[in-house]
Image: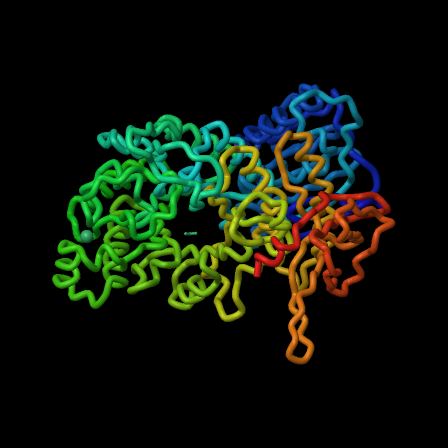
Length: 613
Ligand code: ACM
Ligand code: ZN
């Protein structure tokens, strides 16, 4: 029996057969002569195979009535299989040929991604490798569960170059994500050139440089006279280039202009747009709350004039169906005290500032409708009344999304407990700074459709990489993978009663080799021990015990309290929480698999553990 190939996301149906198809110097990519779309994808496949295999893999059209020839990869977008929808495909590999069929080029593209996963990991390399390029015989039918499969990248808190963004899109397309949500504006930098508003990129795109996590005391605000040297932005030409690059990978780019809050970069550029009218600097990541207003004045006509100008250009640059207007975390305190905001509340008979927020969001929705676009906002846009046709991105849990779906609105589920890729993914004692834990298992166990909701209203889901603690490309990759693979499978593969995390984790480990070949960073946090404290209550006494956990099955954990480095001859953790021995100051922990150490050793000062309570 052939080994089951390690495909992520898991296809709808996968049958393994015996034998292999060998890709060699004679292999051609063939398509029907009326099938121009298949011809384009054929060239794409030939290009993808060329670098790692060194083979030319010529493409060739033949009469579309002729059967798929031998010694070839045959591509067709004329499957005429309604069950496959717009994104599905069939992939049949026999020792004689490979045939991929779809209704649409998009489906064929996904068939190609699966084919690449059937090839050895070196297919992800940029250098020619000499090896047996064989594809196991399989019979696959595949199509997605959800039409919205997104990843969000925040480029405001830390800037990422156009090249990085293209790499990121390349990576997510391989796992059949079809949406790249580009968080382009926030308090810490405005990243999109707007014609006629040069201050947005002359001033708004730059802040003073600060290292380390945001909102820490060491993360001081601008000093008098200090130069704003950190930042960057995308010209409109660069944005068009990224949108086109994404399109070639069947990825839609969703732009987000986050208003009315998270708008300090806009306000720093045009101070008249806030309720205070004060000149603030673009924030370098301080905890500013009430010290500065990052909220637009929603009672000022200028705000709407400026936003109309911005959204007109955004609509021109991004051809997708939707535009995201943010809408999250608006502090209402400045509106309460602002004469212009108060005047609008009186005029419109709004009973509180939630309704004022709703008034603003509804005006933005009309503005976007006038440009032929639908509006998406974070779930705060429910407060004070949802705009008539708004699509809700539910992040503070499932509640907002559930409520919106019950009102007949479309929803994208991205609850932070499962989908926030900025949270750490292993032990907080060794992971880079973040404010909570989302493990690979958490991502994998995400179910986007609540029982009480009609599934038709849930467009799908999304992973979000906020970048307060993501200063560079390598770390963005580290935070995205492997958890992005778990979300890819949740959004693509059929719903199953009980997810097999251990089976999934085995496939993930196989994919690590592909990331190595592609030179893309990923986290190996699943191998590291997790440490937590559990109280044990006996009578009136509470003692603190230490609990150790592993993310993967099949690991054993060894520990020490004597400041030496544990190995497999040390005490093994057997599941009963540990009592701290008298005099101990430190706990050291290491995981083993198959008698070999795996993952990182943790060394934790016991007083740091105490502090966590
Ligand atoms: C969000 O995380 N503020 C949408
Ligand atoms: Zn105001």
